[in-house]
Image 1: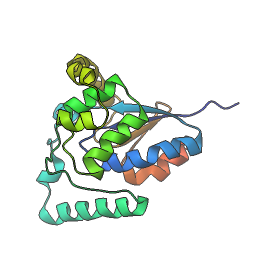
Image 2: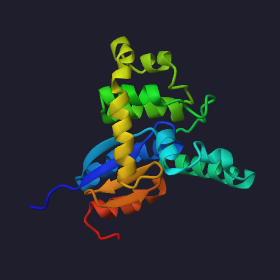
Image 3: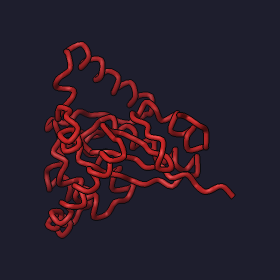
Length: 194
């Protein structure tokens, strides 16, 4: 019997593209029989490590920025998910990422992403996280996850991740972008994509 594929999903709550991918990756894993492994990372830290600007959209020409914003809306409509740009953009995600690492479930990931990008809420605000079911104990102990988040970010960098969302199948094929989920699915089904 063929082993189940391992599908790693690299993300940061700061990315609307990762949000869109998060709404689809669970169903993709179920369809393909893949074991989904959630890989949070601090995108700003990764960008600094690889020499990328912290907020790429801020450095785009106005025409490209407008195109990207329209494209995000197109993908949201295509997948039937809400998309609301947070007033607090760029989002501060250290706290929600550390909270997530304490209970790294698909459900918690989905709730945090939906808060940030489905409703446009400031997930860097502890009150917003509390409203999502994060306990005061988890909020108070989030700092204990500092090293885990640094390690997760370094691991992503060492895997070749340069942005999110990124996907790695069976620790070999690395695929970037929510618009490549068809390729991710084919790779999970065993098709050669390289």
